[in-house]
Image (cartoon, rainbow, N blue to C red; front, side, top):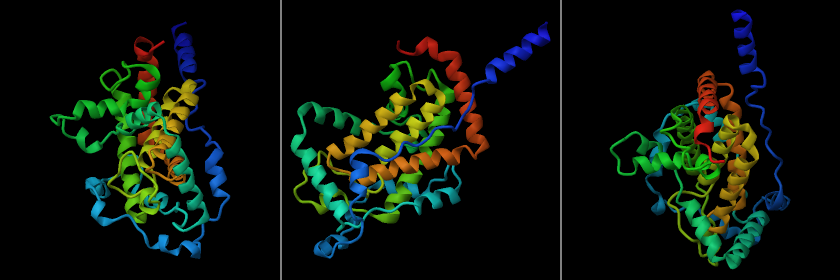
Amino acid sequence: MKTISTFLLVILTTVGISYGQQKLAPVSGHYKDFQLASALPNVQRAWMDTVKYPPAEYGNSIVYLLVKPHYLSEDQVKKLSESIAFPANSSDQVRKELDYLLMLQDKRTPEQIKRVEYLGDIGYWPSINMVPSHAAYEENLKHLFFEGRELMGENIHAGNFPKVSKLLQGVMQDMRLMEFTIKYKLLRPRPYHLEPGLNPLTKINSPSFASGHTLWAFVQAFTWSEIVPERKDAFISLAEEIRRSREVMGIHYPSDNEASRQVAYKMLQYYFENPAFKKDLQEAVTEWNSKASKFIRN
């Protein structure tokens, strides 16, 4: 009887576990509409193609080019960084995107500004996590769990879920490396470098393409959706809000954001080729399933 019970327990704990089955939703909405316009240079706006992100505005994020990937391989980082490109600055697509950002700027409300600036302040940095004595160490770990806390309550944090934390830290190390490899390879100017009518809510000291906020939002949404699949729609919806917030702020083109969504999904596909990721994911899922009911917000 004990053998049968053990066998049944194994069956019950393995049936229904199917990781890496997420599908990327097709491009839609204004992201799809803008892709219908030409991405090729337009000679009438040729001056725009001479503009690159100003070197004088580079920040210290360039040091992430020295970071080693965690779950990705260096070859995968290279392939991903070479798999995407942005439309020409002078293109009809970019002109439409800039006009869209001007429209969003004209319609910004105080409530909207408060929310997008709050989202803009969220960011996990692997370098800070390496120094427990750092003044921002605890806040940084709090940001690591932003999506989980936002959807499931303040008890969703690294202290209660160390295995989930380990997984997210690895994913975010890859994300930062991926983000800045692409940015400093392509040096896309920010929208406000091309459109003087834009008054961004902040200015960012790194190139525009692709969006780092959107990349982490979707990488984490996809990862959380593997841990808590029943909340997948909520995680994706939150990631969508985060990417659109960058447009409302006037600091990213929609094409920055769609590219980041695509890269995040490709990262997930690569992860499931990595035994270390699959092991860490399984441990995170086991931890979540054994502890979440005690901490999750109803």
